[in-house]
Amino acid sequence: RAKLSEPFGYVLKPFDDRDLHAAIEVALQRHRLERQLQDAEARYRALFERSLAGIFVATADGAVLECNAAFAATLGYESRDELLGLRLPDLMVEPDEWGRLVVGVKIVAVAANLELRLRRRDGAVIWALAGITRIGEDAALSIEGQIVDITERRRAEMATRARETLQAVASLARA
Image (cartoon, rainbow, N blue to C red; front, side, top):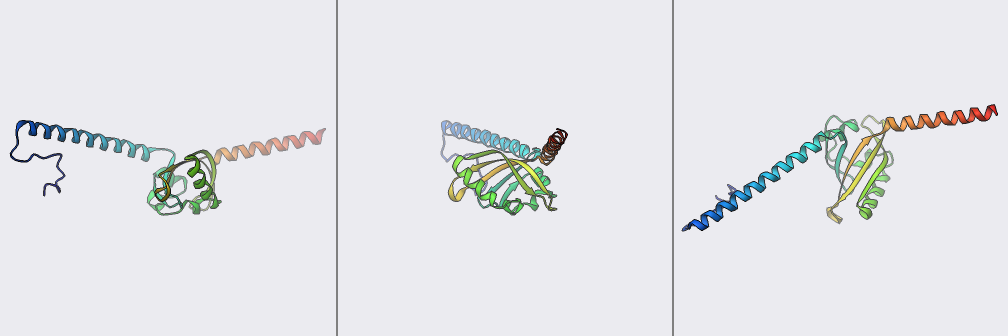
């Protein structure tokens, strides 16, 4: 019964003041550490949930284990629960790219500033700036990452290039 109540400590009879004092100190310290851990977990969870970047955790084969609401929204899903279990390669315009990313992070552990094309739930293609990190090794390998939608930036860059190309052709035609 004592184990089920998860006590912070215990004292066996007969006990003296020193035993009681030591048990109380251990229990107080354990309680403080447990509280610190709970506070840290709450801060991490709040950061994860409020982040404007889409954050995900996936298996090496791409199955989504965890993600935040921003990740779901970026990909056109109403909730994060709809993405859990889906495979990231199936959300990529080039599904083979996932395998190359995993091989890369197995070697270097972290890959940043990757520009990926992803397919939203409605089929629309978006560009995302991504960073991924290897967590664990071999059978315990998972991938953590974040994405930011850069579709509008990419469109603006392509429009600028097209305008510059037209200006170059026009200046050649005038010459």
